Length: 227
Image (cartoon, rainbow, N blue to C red; front, side):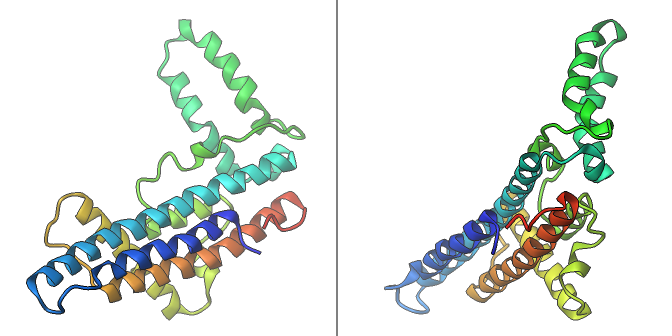
């Protein structure tokens, strides 16, 4: 089985295919066709990158939903997740004068205290785990999956050094191109071959990462695979 997030990503691939086919009917090699190809390539990069970012955020929400539904006790949740979850509340306390901290301390105990009390359970807020991520580049992906006790997600996906390198490069190049386009770099462009290569890279990463995260959650909860 696959997660609902992965299912949505696979379905979204069709949208990219529709976009790449939008130039049909143009005269090959004509200025209008070449310009359209360029615009389509740029738009497709943004679309593929957006779908990939949505997958990362959707799988995070789905994974946290599984933990919340399992009523897992705090000590079984990786410490890295608990620290990150409490980070914003602690920083907010630190930026508040002592005379105004009473209400905030009470709120912290009620919402975060269970994370630091063995044998108790509560509700995790999925958005706190990805509030720091600006883009799903390889370094950020390694950091995110590291919160789930997955030391290096790319190494966890495959034993092949060459495959890891190609996946890393494919994801990094996609994010870089998307950022360049979004920041107004008119010279940045991508061919249909580039778009298909990037699409294949994110699907390969996401499909394998889906299984790795499922195993981590299964081990954490001591239950069946979450998807």
